[in-house]
Length: 389
Picture (cartoon, rainbow, N blue to C red):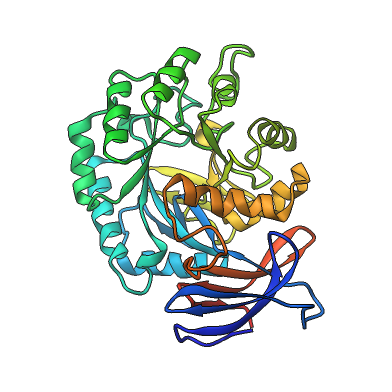
């Protein structure tokens, strides 16, 4: 297998994730230039080759908080390199509900990181989760109530200018005053709208989808612990074929039955996997103070004990690939489609998400150990950025 740092590589060998056939890939100028079928592989343990994973909802990683007061380009570089090790070659740094000046400042820092020649290719856009979400307990999750507000297009444009037009995804609540015209403005400006952290009625949700909302953010989470069994935000989003939900299939945010039910309704073509990982992901378990919140990091998830809600995930998206295969019995091809191909299509990242002639050579080589993805090598634009050896 290749270990060269040059732009042109031959002999990236592995089992193709989509059909279990052995292949050897070659790259030229950072793009896939050859896909050669092999009679059989040369390594005893089965190493798969797949497109790099794409995570459109990640709040931080390895101690770097994208919404935090100490964000730097160097910190974003550290998080990006750690994500490469986890097989994530593309991601949307996610800024959550917080002080407006902080959000503006951090989007400007993210925009700076996007121009960085080393890591910029891995950051095609940003996700704004809030502050235009439900203020109700449970539905707001771990977002601080004092910063939650109704949608404000002028204010959002100020954030977008700071982000150098980098905000590509926004999560909001459709029931808020002004939400529907705000959604129309977003869609007209090429921003994908996801419904999340909301208590919208079936009518609110339908109006939002009619206005152009296309996604549901981490369906089944960002929801109160107790809801009406008939009239709640889940059924309308599952029932409408125009909505593609993202789900956190880390084995802890949703039960096996929830994941299986969502998957049976939406299928591999209309589901996107996200990690929703926090900056605490990858750190030792324990209690951490983050800004105005005291969080508890367990080996599996991050909790906000004060509100009895989950605050985020402790695992990268590569963990979700194994879990959804285990829970739904879907194929590896389907799991990779939900973790790479579908987000690439949703956000028109046309060079990414597939292994094909002329596609960008963002590739991962990995093994499945008890349905867990173990990354061996990661390539971004044909360059080896991580090797386990």
